[in-house]
Every structure is written in C-alpha cells, then in structure tokens.
Image (cartoon, rainbow, N blue to C red; front, side):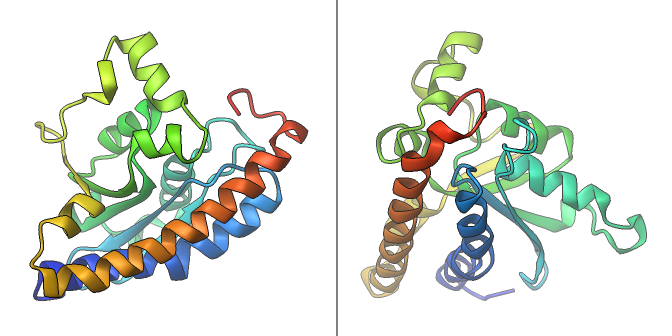
Length: 199
C-alpha cells in the first residue's frame, strides 16, 4: 500500500482512468449512465474488480450495484472479504447504492464526483431528489461517518494536501473531469433512445 495519502489518491484516480473509464465508454455507447465502481485490496491497492452502469439490462444495475453483483459472482474461494477492500465509486453513491454497500459489509467508500456534481454537471438529479422525497434527507445530508462505514470525497481529500502534493492530483482529477464531461454529453444526447425509468 502507498506510504502517503497522496500516493493512495493517485492510485484511486489511476483506477478510475485506466480501469473504470474504458468500461464506462462502452457502457455509454450502449445507452447507460456514466457511473462506475471498483474494488481494491487494502493491503496493496491491487484491483479486484471494476465495473460500470448497466441499467439498460436492469434499472437496478447502477455502477456500484453492478460491481457488487459481479463481485459476488466470483468463486468464494478467490473472493476477498469486504473488510479487506477499498470501495471506489466514480460518483457519490445514491440511496440504493449506499444501502447495498452497507448490506454487503464494506466499511468504506471513496468517490470523485458529489451528488451535486451528478445533478449540476451531469444533469442527473435523481440521487438528491430521492433522498429528499423518499427519506426526507435534505441536501444529501446522510452521515458520512457512521457505525457501518466511512465515506470520503477524493476531491476533498486532495484539497487537504500540501500544495506540492495537491497540484499534480488536481491536474489528474481535472483530466478525469474532462473525460466525464464528454461521456456525459454522449449519454445525454442518446438517453431518449433507452428505456431506463429514471434517465
């Protein structure tokens, strides 16, 4: 495992770019949203699995849920325990995915884009709307540290680093933002052609 928080954050961003984005590019071409997830071993940050949204097959297959589905399809003998892994999500998990991460036994998750980003930059307001309308949770205000897990914003973690460590990570994150801007535009252009209930 990297010896510094900066190295850890670099690794998370690299997994987004190298492992999640290629899957998401294919998924978006098929009509899916831009959300993806990955699982890494805590010990050495090696990749266990990366996945992306597959709502055109099943509207429940959000990026995180699809990742968990694939994870539990792995043979039990070769599947690490959830307590031994980092859960990485490209976007802050919605209420469905928050619950799934909890029920699956993960004690953490890290995300790059916030619920507000999903609403404002990606034109997908459902996460905040469902939290408000169904659970009466205003402004996405769930507890990011609780008895089950700790949630951490990658961009907030980057902002807390000294300038020398922060700048290269900010640049890497901005490159990823540009990639997701393009993926989002492609999804928005074609979403009327799919049958996802909440597009």
